[in-house]
Image (cartoon, rainbow, N blue to C red; front, side):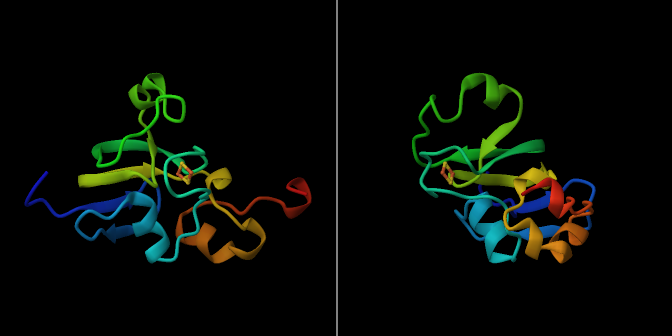
Length: 122
Ligand code: FES
């Protein structure tokens, strides 16, 4: 969506992030210090999936249907390492979407999420 400022908003939290032109959702989240899960960072593993609640993304690189299925796309799932926001995108970030949960109590708080019980994640 040319000419529209790309932004990421995290549902239920006071988080609104700017995106650079062509920047992926994952790169923008990480650049702003939000340690959401990531693996290969090139569309091959599917670990970086998040749910889009509002808005749309563009895929500038091919995404294999075995990694992101048509049903997932229809349900609002995006592959954040390949997805480039088209304007404002609202994401849902769940506790299980955040990496390094033991060291990220501040991030959980900034995302409006309750940190998981460390004993339950061992
Ligand atoms: S990090 Fe592997 S598909 Fe996105």
